[in-house]
Image (cartoon, rainbow, N blue to C red; front, side, top):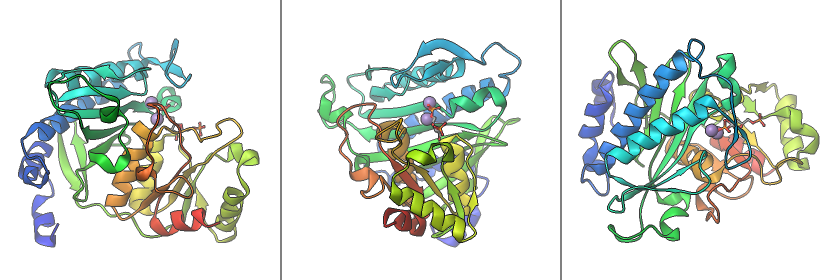
Length: 327
Ligand code: AHG
Ligand code: MN
Ligand code: MN
């Protein structure tokens, strides 16, 4: 985006921004724009619930488990319902993949798009008032519209994403997304109920000094991870780990840094999910000049074999991710 256009567009409302940039989409029929608006609307509802979580009975565990065997929190389930509802109404989506459901959800067979979503990321931080998020990836279906969904529509690799984004419910609420033409960040103005462009054409610093990893697991890290972390410590780097992927990623986007969730003794393939956590953030990182790998290979080139597949995740400033991968 050229400088004058950036300056001119700061403060523009999300709806108008989406409309103004619709011609950038490969298939500019308006459906993808509508989808992004649906996601934004659902995020406002979730944001409202997140903000008053302490006042109404939506904190704590559900007493159930999700697809990955994690204990489901009430807000995980609620956010999943909100996003599923918003995405099923418009008819643009044929299938929804969610962390909270074992199999994908069949929506409208005439829909052109497949969505993968982590409705509420950072579940362990809900009850303690720490930032949490939502992550989404949007794919175009491969099989013809009007026919039943097939495996090829569902298990697409990250390079096939047509859009991806996250919402951060933090000290302010932000929606950050890409359609493959750079990354733009919008801040929510609660009194107006609208997102406004606050971070146009976001670029991730090429290098940084922040490393973000759960060192509680350090005894089972591979030697390459241990030696990279030693390098960080010997060179005056600083540690920051929120435990909400979206929040850790967003900080590194703005300040420069690396986030690593490597293979551990507990999670042999790492903990994070390729389809609704890693791919979206990998797309955004690359669009912002950063990098995302599994330690060796580019995340977006991995062909998924199952919906809830886990993968080691290294994401952030390009030079840091390269250095960690060669340690
Ligand atoms: P989710 O709440 O969607 O299950 O995701 C939790 C993820 C991610 O947000 C975070 O970075 C990571 O789990 C934290 O895991 P550890 O507690 O093992 O560090
Ligand atoms: Mn998550
Ligand atoms: Mn989640």
